[in-house]
Image (cartoon, rainbow, N blue to C red; front, side, top):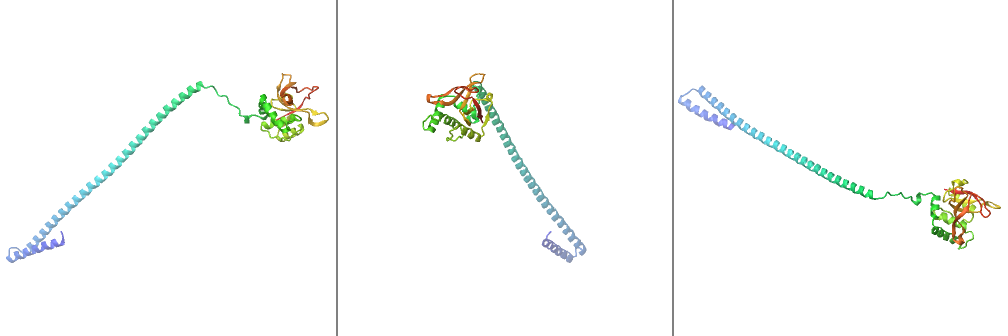
Amino acid sequence: MSKDKFDVLEKLHKDKIKKMTQKGDVQIEECEKYIKEMQEMELKRELKYNTAITVIIGAFLTVFLVLCISSISYSRHANKTKVVQKQKQEQNLAIKNAKTQDKAEVKNDKNNTATNKNEKPKVKEVKQEEKTYYEKIGSSLDKEEDRKNILKSALSLTGGKYEGINIKYMVSILKANGINIPTSVSRTDTLVKELEKLGWKKSTNANDLRKGDIVFAIDTVGIAGVPSHTYIFMGWENSKKENGYVVDALSAKDNVTYHKRPITVQSETTDKMQFFMRK
């Protein structure tokens, strides 16, 4: 109860008591008792009123909090449900795409298998760069047309003259196969030295001769260290390994660059092999 209200009530009761006393109706003690009872009743009524208000406010707040919590929980649940649904949709889409891709791959495999059955097995081609020098040289001289083209290069080095053409022909063959031999080389001994500078090795084992090896004959009579002739070995005539097929320019005037020659045997007109060189 507010102080102002209490004071008003007390004043009213005192006025009433004063009137009653003046009339002689009741005694002063009873009047004071009456005032006290009235005050207590008013306090109780006020307390009940405040308690009721508090309960109502508390109930309202409780309902409000419950509604807020429920709303938050529902929102979280709804968001979680949306996330789960989205993940499920993405998984289903991924599975569908994977199945489609698998089908496409299976189809391609079948097509490739069918194509491979009709295709002939491919033979691995050996690139020119992968061959050894003697293999490249031997292959470059198989065709007459290629031998004649190299001969034209040799003649350009001699000014069109056939004198000394054989050594220039060997130089042209080597250069045509990527071997850096100076075009100024004009003697067999000089050619040997240039090849040695490039790492070429000598061998006297005629049984080891291979197509494309550079062969040097025995030294020129009276000139030690200068082979009398040089040529390219192209293969044996037979298993005796005496005569073989060679490429040189001894008969270049007659357009003959490929012919048979004694290799391991000496004849009246040709000198036998002294050694060959290979890299």
